[in-house]
Image (cartoon, rainbow, N blue to C red; front, top):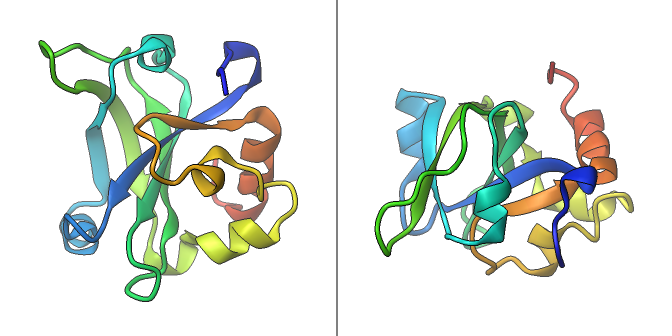
Length: 144
């Protein structure tokens, strides 16, 4: 689906906790300053101030996967030759008891059709619509 700035609620960046020990990484430092994204029109739409959500994925029985962090982009994505681009951000990983599990999002009819649930293998960045991000905020009352 084509993303437009008019219906962009938040960018959604994924990290696979099966290939990288995200739990250990974020236990030591819950701040995330940059993330890799695939070059393309979505990466070119990314700009400072836009909301961003961190989604941890992996084997379903291992960890409580889903939304692990929230923040904002601090600039546009930056190309690095032929490889992935990097997007600067200011994102804080939530304490484990404040993370929103995938099952919770699936059970919420407002979020059940989110791209990350329909196409979990899609490359970064994914996104939430304005309505989906508003629904997510209902599950994260600590969001500014």
